[in-house]
Image (cartoon, rainbow, N blue to C red; front, side, top):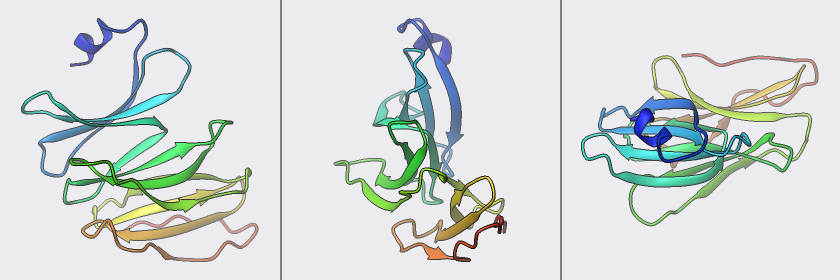
Length: 158
């Protein structure tokens, strides 16, 4: 409950909320200080228990099994430059999937419309690169759709 959370902190912004595929968990990001630094939370909607907390994230995305989340992490300029994955329950076992060293590019993780694929997009103002992970097997290795070509922008949908 956002109102209940807001009553406990001096400031609250919740820019992202995503329900799990099994409809039992909620992934959301929250800024509680006003500095535009977000913490990711996974909440069991049946019990209200916070199952997982991930500091300093920009976006969160579910795998289709509802057991794994992918998230982007910003650099010191707040540019999303890393994509990680972790199990929602148990010991945190964060695994770095991809890191983008070029400051002209930012990263995003999302699901295709049919929820079959997780996309990891790396974009600048004029150039794109996309990798896919099977959303049913979120710990599999991502595969590259098209290598970066300066001036080529593309997006993947399924």
